[in-house]
Image 1 (tube, one colour):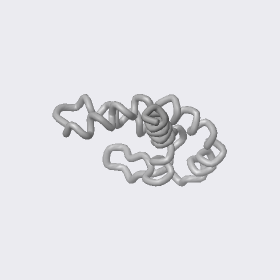
Image 2 (image 1 turned 45 degrees about the vertical axis):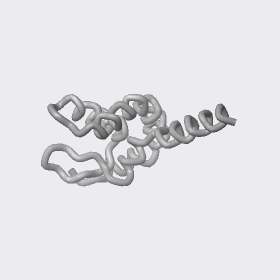
Image 3 (image 1 turned 135 degrees about the horizontal axis):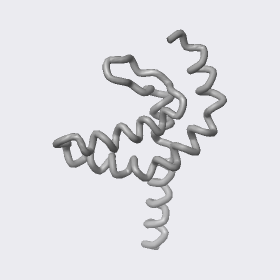
Length: 98
């Protein structure tokens, strides 16, 4: 019974991490310094990289470092999710009036 719970918890954790950066790209967008947030091509990978990078910029609360550690595992999943969502993100990025 205990091993079933461990496997279930691991499965839920992996489902929660599956392309989390990509989900954030569509809901919150990617923000550059001083620029408004917007959906970007491969924005999930950009969000993951920003989260991991901020963990190494001076002092961060302990919980932020835990989430940054989880974002490291999310990189390959976001790569797959960002590639699958390219037909959606390409038109958004190309029709934006930059």
